[in-house]
Length: 287
Image (tube, rainbow, N blue to C red; front, side, top):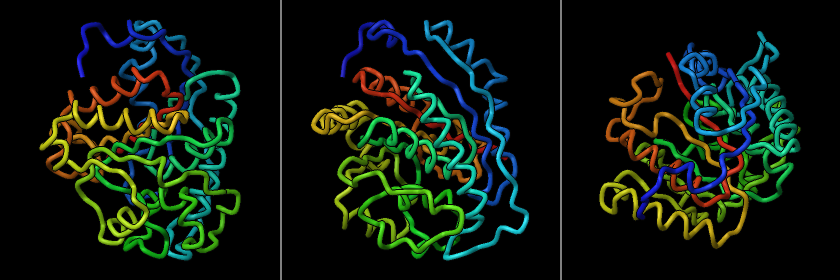
């Protein structure tokens, strides 16, 4: 995959709707809720503007507190996560209807319940590229921890709908993603139950072993071929733990042997070059 010009010279810079989702109830660590403000603090708006993007900053969402939220049906804090992600879905829908590319800053990765749902509610079926050390495809019945940051894909997949028990706070969520339209890059810490789901549903994925063996450019060539066949709007969900901990030490779920910073940037550049990316989610897990 050759690039002879800077990325943003290839396509007109998008108009971006920036939204913070300081959600931390999908996992046990404090600090993840600081992600949006810290990312803004290092100048993400100014950097986007210097590259020609028109940026509308919608600020950070405020989420309702549920002090008595408990584990139910294999999911911890379902009311908190459900309420927050419903709010996020509604805001992403508002951004998309304004004709903007939504850039969501997290927050733990359970927020993707809202970002993917909101994007799909406006655009219909999506192709989702999930860049992550983990598959996040557990269901409440397969999860060993009950942490909902490990379950968003499992709750979003249509094929797993009958494997998910009713959860308080999440009755609004209708599965909106087909397994054939899901692709992973960077997997290296996958639970046995998740591996079974991936294989059983035929989900396309590139583990870190694949990235090492094939090289990131070959992985992206196959990724883009896969996306072009589906001809669906693209949603990129990028978890910072996809990168090696030497690149992003401020994550609560570090797994050694991850992507380099250059490989991570190459992924975002290649997907931008397809011209299909319309919503991105970053989960910046700080502790």
